[in-house]
Length: 242
Ligand code: MG
Image (cartoon, rainbow, N blue to C red; front, side, top):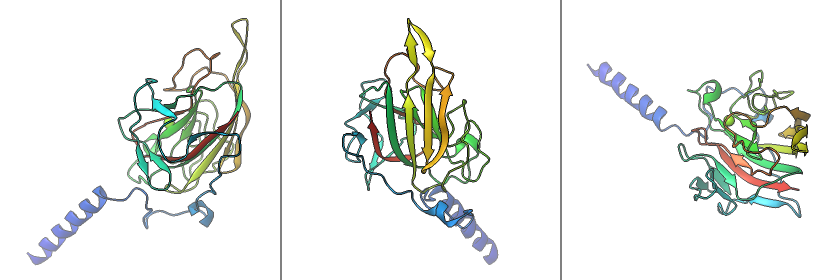
């Protein structure tokens, strides 16, 4: 009888532990391939002249995907914002066109119970249309829907992911598509550095919108969009240089 109650207490403790597990802490089950994967990427402050889109203080530069409603993602200590499940995607008030460079720092939660697209899914959409995927793809052979991919278009050249819970960065050099007489003359192009590693080199994007993007007329400017895919992905230090 005594051993049975011990087991019950143990089971109850395990269930409570799983439910309350801190998604920002790795556990003993997690094995990193190398120590560097557990080190935050160095934060890169906005250079002079950059458009600061998020400095950790507020959502002044952002609205919900409808273009007008107030953002209610969570502000966390350390200049961090966190996606709120069901609240929806958020977009910058300002729209961008031509050539620009976007810097974003992000980290994905540790969700060992999830698989595939169900672990730390979010995304950074350039002009609201072209997604650079955010996902926990640590240690995987990266496909076109993994972290660092231009979603559905191109897999990253290498898997440059750090471990979940660890800060990572994207530096995205974007060139908007060019139109002549209402016809697309040049596709959009993107180079992407993931944690400083070049994973896309001026890749042409043959579509006008990737999955769940804002769409709209691809000859017009578009905002930066951060995706709510139901996971508490965090972002900090978002800026853009025209
Ligand atoms: Mg996504």
